[in-house]
Structure formats: structure tokens, C-alpha cells
Length: 315
Image 1: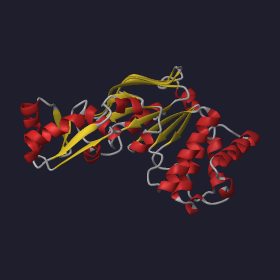
Image 2 (image 1 turned 45 degrees about the horizontal axis):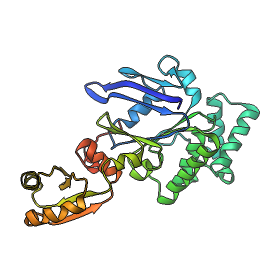
Image 3 (image 1 turned 90 degrees about the vertical axis):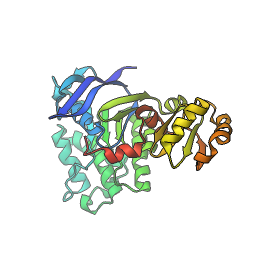
Image 4 (image 1 turned 120 degrees about the horizontal axis):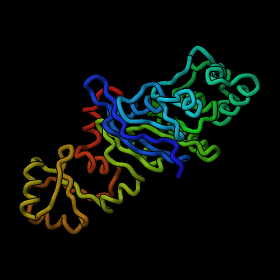
């Protein structure tokens, strides 16, 4: 697989704060790669580096083999970027916004008109072309912003929390549009998200936590590494229960968000033994298939929701 993006030992600091800590990974051409992590985990900082808005404190970022710091103009011509907040003028119409952006990316005349018509059709916006952006729903405005990012037919599309603030129907419509792009243009997509269901749509994901890339792989493969099922115990004293599991049954476990996650390859066979020995300490137990939340827990030792609370800003 040809590398569309290569991130090599990238560290970035804001003063004393380390936003990215020696992050390295590659993304293949035509792949949909997800950057999953809580707010403040480093996703937006990484996008800013890839899109040439900043240079890393150390390390390097390359797009199709070109160092983005050394040749930012060449990189920008191959990139489409959709950031968390729409880059649209709400006083202009959908078509006017697209024509304005066409000029900014060097398209003019008949070429610009063809590109605008193409993205209006691709994203189902043709009938709303003359509407001012301020009159659009959140979903339509987001699709307009996506059309803007795809106007010059980029080879690499960066999507930073693309469905933030959208209702379920608008989210589905946006993902339908992204799927159409993949089918018809083979555009590489890198999606930063904190939503597990969106990460499931990716070919591979990398989990960013506190600036570190803690795990990378196919979502299904990552879940499979945890086994076919996981065992969770509810108790009033998680610390005491983990100690008793180790002492009485030689079972390893960890505390996650007030619950106890038991590390066992066959939890359905272990659970009766736990109840036999420690039923007085257990309020409830559940066995379920592993999720990406569980993958995050296994990699970080914390629940995803805990990291969301602790994460600050949009780093």
C-alpha cells in the first residue's frame, strides 16, 4: 500500500504543554483512517500540522512523500480540509461560497463552474445552490462545508469532528456523502472523532490519548484481541474486590470508572467461581462482546468518558 500520509516521531508543544508526544503512523492511499480520542487528546493539533497551518516542534509529516514543512504549497493543492467549525460566509449563498473558495484554490472560469456543479450534485445541494447559508439546517451547512473542502478534487481529505452538532439524520446523510466519495473517487479520508460508531466506519483507527498514539489497527481486530467477551463487575468497593480476585482466584482485574473489568479468556466459566467465592462483594455482573470503549480502556487504563471529562480544549 502506497503511503498517502506519513507521520514520523512528531512531537508538538504549546509552551510547557505537550500536545503530541512522538506520534508515528502511516495512512495508505484510498484508506479511511480514524483518529479516535477524547477532546484534548491531540487530534486537532495533528490536523493543523498535516494541513501546514503549523510546523511540529520535532519530527516530520509527509503527504505523498513531500515534507509538508518544506513544500506547504504543494501539499495544500492535494489536501481538502473540513475543520470542526464551518468555513462558510453565512451571508452568501451556497453557490457563492463555493465559487469564492474555487478562486482561493486557483480554479477559474469554466473549470470553476464545472467543479462547483460537480460538488453540488455529489452532495445533494443542487436545489439549495441559491439559498443563503444562514437559512440552511446544520446538516445542510455541514454538507456545504464538505463540498467546499472537496471542490478541487483533493487526493487527501481531512475531516475534524465532521458531524459535531448534527442530529442523527444529518449525521447519516453526511456519512452517505463520504461513502459516495470513496466509491467514486478513491479519495483518502482521515477522520478525527470522539464517536465510537464513526470510528467503526474506518478501515483502521489510531487512538490518541494525552498526545500519545496508544494503539492502532482495524477496529474489529482490535476488539478481537480482547477476546470474544468481557466481564464487568459492579461493587461498592472496587479496590477491595480487585485485591480479593487476585488473592482468592489469582485473577487479574482493573478498576474502570467505578466498575471492575476482569481480564479472563473465558468469562462465562469464571463468573460462577467468582460468585461462589465473593458474592458478598458483588452487586451486579455482566458479560458482553468487546467494544471500542473496551479497547480504549485496555490501552489507557481509563474509561473513555473519564478522559472526556479530563480533556481540556481542542488540542
